[in-house]
Structures are given as structure tokens and as C-alpha cells.
Image (cartoon, rainbow, N blue to C red; front, side, top):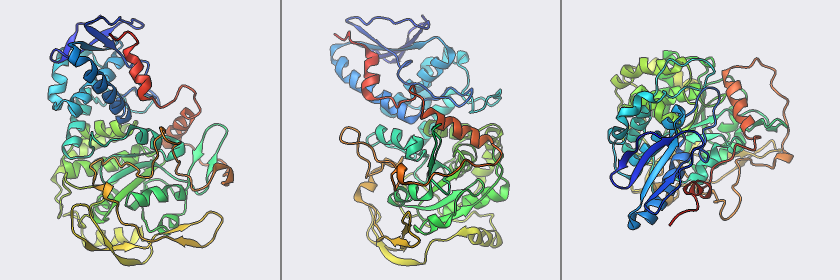
Length: 489
């Protein structure tokens, strides 16, 4: 057993025991661990950090237990095994709770553990080879602190069930990384679901969700595997910015990415093949530019949101462009007060030339001819904005179905900027809907692609394989609560 560390004075403590040891709670001390309840599912040599779903689930259970035992004068001792990776994840998730619910800064949250930080391994990227980039627990905490400061998420409205629902491959394999961005795995032309567990969704699977969240632009960073007009038909702009899998974005590609995201009025959905490497790198550049994340803070935050984000040399690339991103100026800086459906004024990079802007505009597949509609922006009076009349292609039909323009619901004023789907139904009342517009049995199954496998293919296949594993199940509140044992007094 390591020494006991006081995290919250006289209330919450941390320690570690040898693997398999289970300390028994007493009338004064309650021991609990999540080593068997909240597990990181790795791609290769990566082992953490535990994601936001895990973090909020842990926090909810810890808060519930604190409200129960604190009046009794009991102490809570959170413990992990002495394995370095287990300790890193345990300390990280406990410190995240401190930031989210105990008004701590990242520095405050890590301070009690200073003497043992040298024993914690840095987090590894999603590769099978040695990682020379050192991402620490503190980097992740600083990323969370900065995201919270800029109101990327709200502890009062974050929904664990929805986070877990949409991260599943059959439900979209998507995560919100900021109020502006969704990262998701790339769609395909045709739906398929193989016996091995591989699932490919189509643009039509995503359109209803994207429209409900005011996504106005989809950016594709990989080669074309679907017809972009299928997003265009739904009133969503589309931009192709291809560069090779596993590579860093060329300057012109990155500048066009930033300019397009700043110009579109709504949210941006970005994908490559797996929605991890290229996707995380480009979105990360935007966050560094607009919110002055350091590269390590940014990568730490992205991996809390979407495990495996930013891979290999992309980590060093983000460090290399950090100063350049901070030096950029924007006409209308996006502030932390941006709500999830706030219409932003178009902005242009100060160094972009008219020729570059024109080139970017020409390469973007625009949606259908705009019509004028009144959009109510939460917290503002009615304003005139340009809005496209969305269309959706009905499966089995050659003609698009026109849908009436929708205005943001009042509930979108909530600061839960990790985007709760308001049509989502909790598993407590009914089963969660998937993104599929048709039942899988009614969808056409496509053959496997015959192209050479890349890093993105491998990562995506690994993630899809998890869905078939009986051990890969989303943790529940009840399961984590059981980590406190049955010997409460």
C-alpha cells in the first residue's frame, strides 16, 4: 500500500494497493475503486485517459456517495492498483472531478500528487509503436480546465447516456469536441453491417441529427467514399480537403479548413476515415487559434472527448504550429459565450488573400438555393438570417423530400455544448434510437472495399470489433455504485 494522499481535506483521499487487494470499509472509512468498473478500451498501446462519459459517471456516483456519508463524518478513500497506468487514470479522473465539481484549478487538483507524478507513465497515442510525445495527467487537466472556462460543457446538463449512445459505432461514432465541432467516422455510399461487426453508415443516417444540431458544414479529410451531394440535398454545405492518412495537413489545407469553419454560421462536422487523426489535428488547430489552448492542453482535451484523437507525428505537428495559431488574428473572435446555435459573423484569416478565399469557396459544395427565414437565437431578438430549405433523399426514392425549415428549440440555450440530442430517449424509459433512417434489414449491404488498408482503416476496424466483444459494454451508474461495496454503515 502506498501512502494515503488527502485530496479534499478530511473528506476524500487517494491511495493504491497491490493488484487484487480489496481493503474492507469500516465504520469511519469507505474504500472504493473503479479498476474493474471503468475500463479504457485501447486501440494499441494507448491506455487513457478515461473519457468524459467515464468522468461524469464517476463524478455522479462520487457526489451521491459524498452526500450520503459526509453528514456521518465518514472519509472516502479512492484507491487503484499500484500499476502505473491504473494510477495515472485514477489520479486523472479524480482530479477531473475536482475541477468539475470542487472548484479546483488544474494546478490545485494535481498538487496533492506532486511527489508521485514521476512514477506515472505519460499517456500513449493510439499506435503500436514507441511514443516519444509525453502527454501527462496535468496536460489533460489543463485542457479540461480551459474547456470549462470557455463553456465547452456544463456539469448541470451533461448527459452520460447520450455520450455513450452516440460514441457507439452503430449510433454514429461521433463526439462533440467543442460548441463548434463534431468529430465522426466517415460515412460510406451504402449501409452495411458484417458478421464481423463492421458497420458503415451513410450520409442519410447523419442528416437528421446534424440538422437538429444546426450543422451547416461537413468537411471530409479523406478520399471520397460517398457522394457529397447527399449532404447538399439536406441543406448542409460540404468541403473536400483531402490529405494522406496519418499525415499532417499542408499549410494551404489547414488555412482553408480554418477559413471555412470561421465562415459557416453553424456547427461543423469533420471526418476522415476513423475521425481521429486528421480530424483531431485540424479541429485542434482551430481550438489553439481561437481559445489559445497549448498543443498539449488541446490533445489532452480532445482525448477526454474522443479517445485516440491525434496520432503519431500529428502530436509534434500541433506543437510546431502552436505559436502560429496563437499569432493569427480574426475579425470576429469566437468567445466562450458562444451558445451551441448562436449564428456567428463570418470571419476571415488576416493573412488569407482574396484568391485563397475564392479558391476555398469554389471547392465547397454549396447547399440548395437559400431562402430567407426568421431564426430565433436564444437570448436575442428575432433577426433575419439566410437559411437553406433542407431536403432529404428518401431511401429507395430518386426524388428528395423537402422538409420545412426548423428553428432552434429554446432548450438549445442550455450550455451543454457537448450537444445533447433533444430527441434522445433515456434507456430508463425506452431504448435509444440509432441514427439509421431505415432498419438494418431493409438497407442494402455493400461489399468490402478493395483498397489498401491505412492507419485509419485499422483504427476503425478495431473500434468496430469492440462492438462484438461481450466485455465492451458501456458502464452504468449502478455498476460504478457497486464499487463502494455492500458494507456501508
